[in-house]
Amino acid sequence: MNNWFCSFFRTVLTLLFAVSSLHAATPVVELLVENARIIPVDPGLPELLDGHLAVGVDGRILALAAGPAPAGLVSSANRRLDAAGRFVAPGFLSAHSHLYMSPLRGVGHDGTLYQWGAVLTPLLNGMSAEDAYWFTLHGSLDYLRSGVTTAYDFTYSGAVGAAAVGPGEKVPPPILKPGPFEENQLKAKADAGLRFVNSVGMPRISPCEVILKHLEALLDHDKATCADIRFSLKWPSAAACNAPRPSRPPTSRLM
Image 1: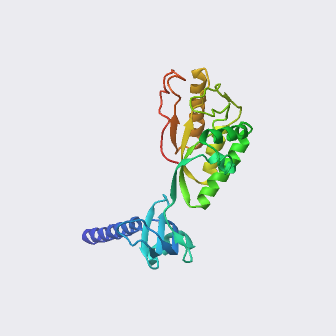
Image 2 (image 1 turned 45 degrees about the vertical axis):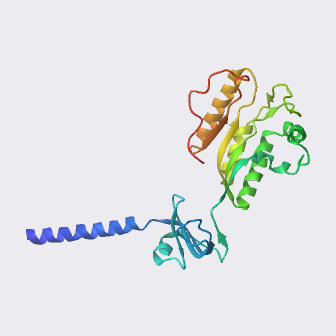
Image 3 (image 1 turned 180 degrees about the vertical axis):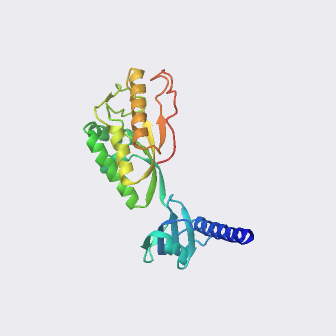
């Protein structure tokens, strides 16, 4: 009786282990793209192939191959998308963006850099924090529609001031307009679904404690809003501000 029970128990354990191993070996597919013309950008694959692409729940590519998707991927897919022969390729990256300027395309493009700044400044001075949200959302959605999925975005602080129109020209320090300019730009990019690095330029306002307070408040807000974010900070020159840098780094992960 004891030998029979031990043999039965071992058999049950073996079956349970096999089933659990099979389940673990079959990852859940969040999205299965089928009938696609894929540009894999992989030295181990052809430059172009007609096939399928499987994406896991963590957003990582699980499978990419020519031909129809195997039954295992099809059965485990939460969503299936028939690309109907359309191209599927990695998203483009924009290494230098000013998404809040999206509605201002073509403005001042026929002048020098300083002339362009002089034309833009009055327009930006009249921009509200709500405008900053909609302008940035427009730019973000346009990026995604055009295949740009990640952007290094230089944001607008809401500073009002005169623009230098020549090399070495001195202008008065700007004044910060009231309103959540930086916060609204971050929200717009997150709402659009764009991956981004938020590049924040500290306005050259004084005293320096005001700059530090502005930065600390911005970091606290964005950490609470988007826990998974990367920040880049452009600090004013030593001549503009001799205060110590923030004690905590303004950088975490990519959105």
